[in-house]
Image (cartoon, rainbow, N blue to C red; front, side):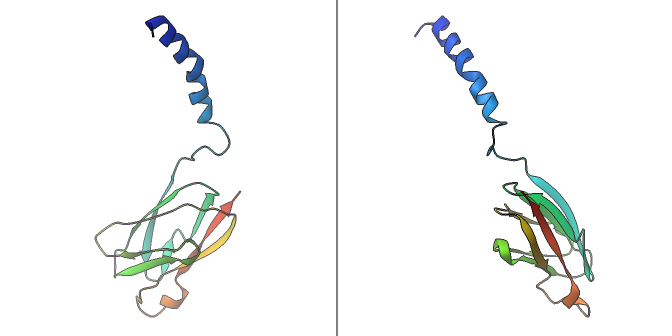
Length: 120
């Protein structure tokens, strides 16, 4: 194949690759959320995401070991003071999904939780 024919083919098909990035169903940019797990609250305690949008939670705990459990997405992570924990998931349906601390962190632990609000 000559260089002219190759150039024509590239010019013909290149726009299709560019347009595919904006097509419905194309991979969404990840949502990155920094979260702090304190006694006895997650900051923020509400996360807003979209269906199909990958989510990366970067979580720190300045006081004591904790955990974050998001059972509807089948994910959890241990949070160790002085280290960043990462939790990744991708919502597949809209709704409100609860998460909670699943490592006892003292009196008040039972109320430590939040929600992931997923829109279509």
